[in-house]
Amino acid sequence: MISAVSTPTQAEISDEIARLAETTAPGEAQPRIDYPPYRSSILRHPTKDPRHVDPETLELTAPCFSQRDVHPLEADLTIGAHAGTNSAYAGEPIGERITVTGRIVDGEGRPVAGQLVEIWQANAAGRYIHKNEQHPAPLDPNFIGVGRCLTDADGSYAFTTIKPGPYPWGNHRNAWRPAHIHFSLFGNAFTERLITQMYFPGDPLFALDPIYQAITDEKARAALLATYDHDLTVPDYSMGYRWDIVLSGTNRTWMETQ
Amino acid sequence: MITPGQTIGPFFGQGLPYAGGGELVPPGHADAIRLHGQVLDGAGVPIPDALVEIWQTDANGAVPRETGSLHRDGWTFTGWGRCETDRTGHYSFTTVLPGAADEAKAPFFAVVVFARGLLDKLLTRIYLPDHPANDADPLLSALSADERATLVATADAQGLVFDIHLQGEHETVFLQHD
Image (cartoon, rainbow over all chains, first blue to last red; front, side, top):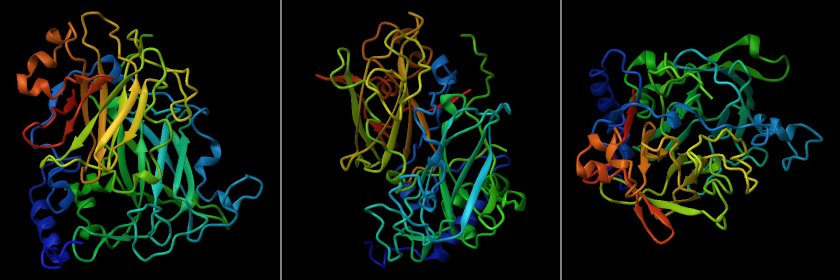
């Protein structure tokens, strides 16, 4: 544990966030990897600008996944609720059942079809299953918090899960992460590989969170927000959220020649 | 609006690593090599919560189009692998040397790195030591000797060693594809 003397307060972190927000450049679409309010970033970001390079054929293609890799039931993180699936989890997880769906396209607007989507998340109490996660919130014996699926031909993905809770972390005193689902995404090219986090609308922790605020442009940040969609809400079953994803790794258009 | 990245965070071990992720070929494969190294921070301290993925051509230089990376059958070469660093910041893949489809092109492993504390992905390449096409490679030939050294693996008894420095004197050259 870091001693209380050296641990910054939320007010100090919020002040740093506010000062950096004033330096936002128009169209700054990505998080700043050099973002000291997120203390763990200080020694873990390159200080030199990335080297511009023309992508090679390998980098303009992406690894392939199929039903050999992913079982359709892996898209339902509440699987214990369903009888007859041989799930190790006999009961239903606690929390607000949600469905999260959306469409993945690349920088040219082409659907990312038949591609792997992976998610992981905390349970409804804000607890992850991880040896380094020890805060006093309950584990849920019926919830692992890991899912996978393959996108459809139009780039659509869909998961059924539980709305994750916010959780405390050690960046500063009284630091709490807004509720989020981690997404790992593959595109049509290796350069489009993306790991990010999906957030829920209206979270009061947004302004306080140095990971979310590392994306200094408000419009760019908003691209990580799911929207509540009542048309996706399943009567008597789950609340519906939509989150669309745009992956971009290159300005070039790749023409399949093989 | 492009979807921004976010850090992989500390808890990806729950969801992303899987058995056989780093074994693109079985260790007993006739042409198997080891590709391994450490991921290090700006103080030279190993990073125990990073994730490294590689994507490569097969030994003949063809880009694999086979599926099955998540459930490897020991025979199908998918060209893609994933390995999390251990408590000493070390990662290790078992694979084959990538070939070049065009003899004039230097073969390489395409690499993506994620870590707790790293707010977005980093892309780079691992080139092969002493490959005859390295000198004419458009990227390598445009780099200083020190920069170039960060992108070329060194040989060891089992294969190749490649350390990834996120920051510091030996900071790896990371890439932005145009």
